[in-house]
Image 1: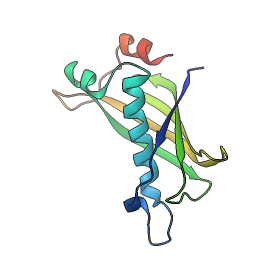
Image 2: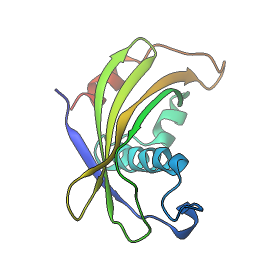
Image 3: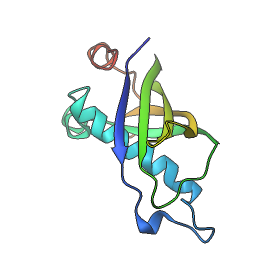
Image 4: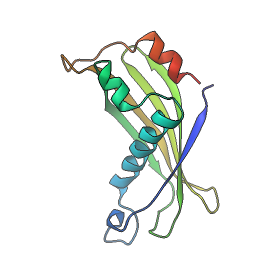
Length: 135
């Protein structure tokens, strides 16, 4: 089982919708922001590093369950865990948690597909990257 990493994300006023809570589309933004942070701080391989190797990641599958509304004054933690690697794809589980009570606001997974920057086509995730992300 791979490690679960955690990032604190700030809810911004422009994340709030007409119902006075975080708009559903922002939850994925929070996960993506956490992944960027964790790539640098936990995996020691930033998006810039991938680009220098000629790769990039695109989200090909998104699955999310909304459990609780988030509000402007909430403090949130985004936890992610590398679930699996299969060919060109990596599945990453996530949990968005209210910091004050550790209750889950949303959970799900994203499937990322590695692509070649040169061709724009999917490429198999290299073994050295799998090892780096299997912590």
